[in-house]
Length: 186
Image (cartoon, rainbow, N blue to C red; front, side, top):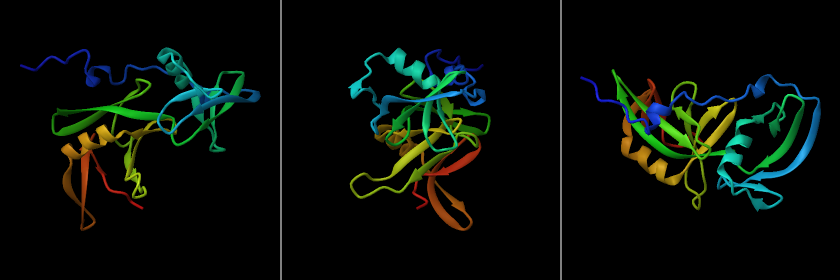
């Protein structure tokens, strides 16, 4: 007998989000917008924080990273360039699940995207300074990434194990059949 999935769990919510097809839109109007996403994940309009989470989620749903390495809010007719200090999202929660022979790590972002680390949603650690420490990230969608917050990174460390790659030992986590080192490649 299987255990029923809690409808509030991240596993139950995985794959339920629907985003507009912003990658296919080719807007003809290009403008600037006084919107900035800080390194701490705060969305600021004209240097004032946006206080409504529903508005932030709406804006995040039409966010796109273009080939010019700039971030835009897009509609079918217009795209507005915004400033992103690091990456647009934060991974604020992680849940570990086991199905068949695989472990999966399911993440929730600060804008309620739910993703599982796997070959399409890679988890990696960039080198940091002594002051900042390691900077872990996960790919969310269409070139958009989330920085893994410190508490979530500590949770990942609890799930970590040693694994050998090309004769070298790495500390990391398995998810979706892939291994992700929790050490900087830099």
